[in-house]
Image: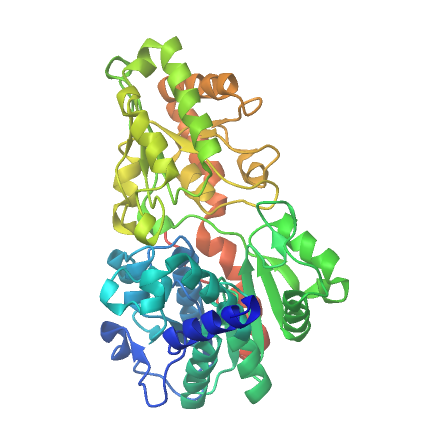
Length: 492
């Protein structure tokens, strides 16, 4: 058999193996979170504007984007909207990053959640579901699967979800016509659902890009050119949307330069911290017993950066009696799916166990504040550079603890951290400079006064999440709800 014919046979086998992947069959009832479906607002009337919010990663998904999504949905409800969230099934998140059921307590009960039966088949751990092709030739199966993913939409892994997202969102709009559709990628295939509903019903849509699509936030350039298939899709989407939101000014500037005719549509809606969690830490360390350094968040740095961080910690311990009695604990997701807790970074941490380094697993949102209260200083290790702020930055500052940066410089996080009085910025990314940073952070943890901590809390307060998102929600409300926007009540 020729190579071309062999490839065709493999592709067809992979297609048959995954024919149902990413597409709800006709007659499937779109599910919703059981405790939410019967809790729709009793005063729901046609006079209330209706927002359809395509938010893959909405609670209880254990993803960092879930915090922004729940705050956005709650703000729209507070502005007088009926809100229907379109997301994927809980079972899908169980296969990937898992679930944080405590997040559901933070979602306004008037938000309706519709779950589509979509999931990543490549993360399925049950061998009984595997075809002969997948079981015998796993690498080739995955190669074919990725090729097929991009047939419907130009995105690996999730492109095959296009029809499911489009049909599921269309059903929601047919049931209750929408005044506005808001889509929050990634996955970027969700953008196809916004375009589909807009084309079929004329529904206006806005894009909460967060990190953007055509910008390479890690490589600091463009991810793809304007004339590529993805480029043509994005051009169409940006031209047709009502507004685009990003999480920081560098990404917004990238998009304004890329689409100068649409520059007026592009706005910044920062991430922030959740005031209702009570993140302020008032712990006073005991140097004689050692200090507790902590990292909280998804560990998405590469092995090189993790090794640098750990080696800097080990070098600092050699220079300080206090640090020799201290610990460095990592909390959060360390890999996804089958690789959860068992990737290259996990090996680096395990090798440094004798030096007080440990990994203690993910933290539920309800336990975030108590986790911070166990620590005396925080380590901020981020990937990327001038385009990556990270939502964790705001949460770190809200604690009022010293924050040590271990990331590329310059970095978008500096725009936020530059005014934080307890920020430690190493001179460069070397083991010696990182060790100096740990020593300085330890000094601040021990010597900072109550006035210093109060100044840190005061600076961080401006980055409360609701305050950051409310202007965007108010703008869309005034434009599409036909009524003056309300001022949201922010928790103290």
